Image (cartoon, rainbow, N blue to C red; front, side, top):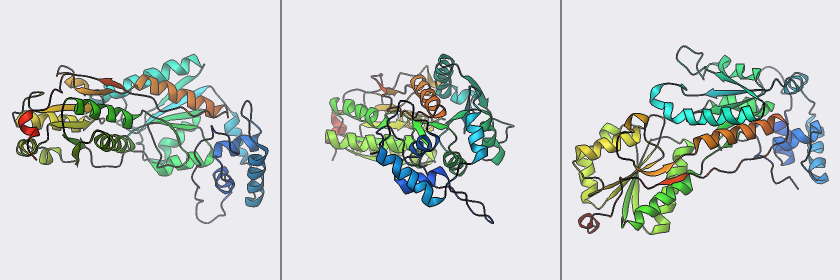
Length: 367
């Protein structure tokens, strides 16, 4: 039986045209039906405190023989050359003021945990203005200077990260990334936190709620929408989701008033790097001259942009960014050591705020 702490199975790499593909650990893992981390431990004999069953070991060795797998000497030398350096690479510029509130706590947690474990940090700035850009082939290649690397960003270059995964380079993404098989990640429990917000609105008497989110498939957004829909179902509420990248056209004063006239008494927005959904929602409510929280309640699934800190504190939840940064370092350090230990989802903290109140009785009577 595979060890319960095994990581998800990793994706298959694609060889360049014109030459035969060298079988990789990812292919051995797929054939054996185990994780690549398990394959690495069996083939490198780095089991340490992890117990791997004889059956699992036999499956891995049989799959390796069937595929003709032999270790890549260059990769083995690279993996063995530990410098006590951990990399940090963001697919969004890390330090502009409009997103500083988002990334700074992550980096604090990363730095503190890395220091406690004796690692130095290397910040790769390929995404910064004037840098190579995250999409440039050489940008991600430089992270191999470190023993392993943490990655941050809403949208990621999956092809380049897939190569890291296939080659066994220790990599951890801060935020859920199930779409890239085998990539390790740490994440916040956005779904449960969103359900808590919906339950709070239900206790205030709201029966119809609307979610505003960006029109993409970012895991953080889909997790929040899942929690929104599950929350509605659990509380017996009705609602709908507005997905848009054109907030000015979608969230107009006229539409806000129409939604309110049709019984929507609470609006919920997701947090993104730019805060666009929350900004658009707040602007539309103000343009519609709807009183908050007298006529409508608002909630933010995350934290407000730093430039809106003087506004009323929104109902919602706080993301444990510092804890996520620390958890990411713990996971990456375990991968570098060849001793994988998955981190659980980190819980968010409910924030009562001042933007929610009892549902407007007149609007509640509209069918």
